[in-house]
Amino acid sequence: MTEGPLLGKIALFVFPLMLTNLLQITYNATDMMVVSLSPEPNAVGAVGTCGAFINLILNVFVGFAIGANVVTARYLGAKDGEGASKTVHTAILLGALLGLLACAIGQFVSRPVLVLMGNDGSLLELALVYTKIYFFGVPFMAVSNYAINILRAKGDTRTPLVVLTCTGLLNVALNLFFVLALHRSVEGVAIATAVANAVSAAVFLFHLSKDEGPCRFSPKKLRLHKASLVGILRIGLPAGIQGSLFSISNMMVQSSVLQVNNATLTEMGYSASSDVFQPIVKGNTTSGNLEGFAYNATNSVAQAAVSFTSQNVGAEKHERVWSVLRCVYFLTFCVAVVVAGSLLLFHTPLFSLYGVRPGAEGTLEAVAYDTAVRRMVWMLSIYFTLAFMEAGSCALRGLGYSTVSTLCALTGACLLRIAWLATVFRAHPTLDMIYITYPISWTLTAIVDFVLIVILLRRMIRRRGQKAPPTEKPSPGDEPRQTPAQA
Image (cartoon, rainbow, N blue to C red; front, side, top):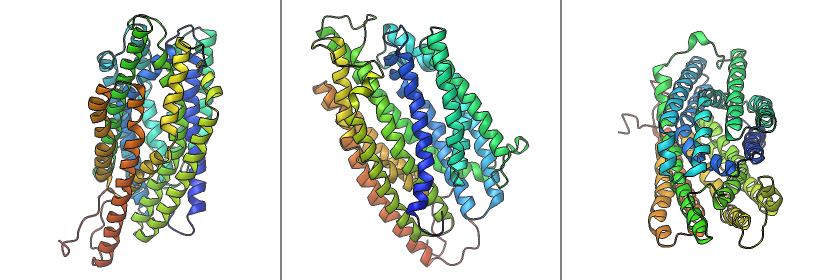
């Protein structure tokens, strides 16, 4: 990552990573598709309504996993094998502990949170069953996530591809078994996901135990090493907070969607609290699930920005970071245009996989289809703005400014959406007023991120040129500081 031409290397790094992420979202989409075959008409909507709540808790340990990626990459770039080894064992133990904590929290707060979001009737009961079972698999998911980020830090994106391909196929097979053979619904796909996550964690740990470098895993070395933990927390905590704040804003969006859904059912003569098919919820969930393909594809390029930027900063090759950024922004734009364009072009057959099809005017089926189309058009028409936002956010973390990245996302995306829903949407409670907040917030945040990257990277280069030879080696998790002479 620190030598030679970059575009080809980044592309080779991104391609397996992108395949891995797309396979993961494919398996998640398969959960939705298979559960749509169950006799429960609201099964798809129920799984979709609890997504933002689940992510609220999961994003905390996912953020810490990004911290593990950055710190491990810094140590590897600095050729510090002992520091990398300590970070690996600190990260895996931290992942297991946070996963257990997330599991416990999820069990206790699921019902009140889902009710607060506006779930009711069969939609609430189905979402509650899915959520509680899902959280039992979270500790395994956490360990897998940390292991994947450790492998990415050392440049290995092929192993996660192979492992997640196999465990994903296991997930699909179990989905079909539970839903079609045992006639289960949301509980079937939740159990399948938990089992697949457990197998995935075991395989990743076994693979790391055979590593011949500093990232070799040994259960006997599992400890929370202070320097590594501080570095992971410094980078990961802001990233986790950022992800959780996004989830809070998405929960408010989901609550607003439920509000429009209930109002629409009332206008059509149905009782919103009955067990009738919830069309806007299903249409919104279907489109949102398909958008996951575009997000995971573009986020794969953004993850390259974390690893490549971190290693070059660790090697003190700050000028090379400019080339990394040019390559990342170019690739993420191309990926966003191709994937988003493909989803828009083939939206009707893709919707049908979830049981959402054009219906006669005035029917619930027509409402579901119209909702899915409306959301997809708003979200994907200028999806490259989200790609730029993700790339900029990850580049800031790679530079060591994770807190700055979080503040940008908090202000430019989360708070803006919350304020919009509390004012504009309240005055005009329509789906369009919900969906338009996304492209606006993406564009503003992407611009701010890019400007800050330019300012901060120039400052780092200037400081490196001014400072005297260091007498003490900084911790790879530290953000850049002034030397005593500069202060």
